[in-house]
Amino acid sequence: AIQLTQSPSSLSASVGDRVTITCRASQGISSALAWYQHKPGKGPRLLIYDASSLRSGVPSRFSGSGSGTDFTLTISSLQPEDFATYYCQQFNSDLWTFGQGTKVEIK
Amino acid sequence: QVQLVQSGAEVKKPGSSVKVSCKSSGGTFNSYTFSWVRQAPGEGLEWMGRIIPILGMTKDAQKFQGRVRITADKSTSTVYMELRSLRFEDTAVYYCARDAPNYCTNGVCYPVDWGQGTLVTVSS
Image 1 (spheres, each protein chain N blue to C red):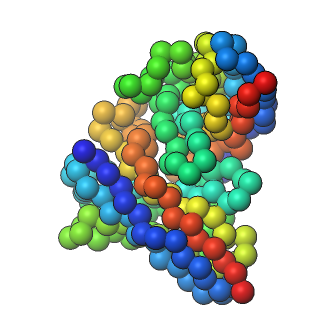
Image 2 (cartoon, rainbow over the protein chains, first blue to last red):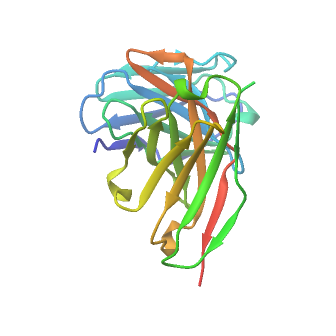
């Protein structure tokens, strides 16, 4: 199965900061990658699909980039509601997999 | 409006089985792919498998092959995830998810709608 490695596993940031999370695949996955935001007690929320397409209704401060093996989720100006755990997920192979998650905490 | 409503929390003994349901409303049930994902306490999200009801096709993560069975009942627009031979480490919140036609590109349809989660506790 394709492995996804996210970094960092956690980070502390302040409101207004620019935050970047990376996701590296163990083999090329084209652009078949999504990013989710997950908060306790709720289902994950799709933010980005096809590596760089913003889901309707998701604030434009979220953006995704990359293809092949290296991907990035960027939050341009962190807001209080953005403190959560973020996951990448690949859909290139028959067996879908998640990265291990990146927890974004308040500094 | 698409909604996925899952069955309630369960407490099970090691070695037993659990069957979690996920009822879909809104949209055309047969057209979509449903996935199951779990999160154990303090751990990340883990993909378990998926089903395409119209085709009856399933795909399970290697870790769960032989223990998980994902099924769909088209008459009630409900998908099920049954996990057998439960172990303490199967204690987790289990989520179902469904893709949406607006979020299909390059042959991939991305899970957009999620259930509220079902806590399964394995305890002796």
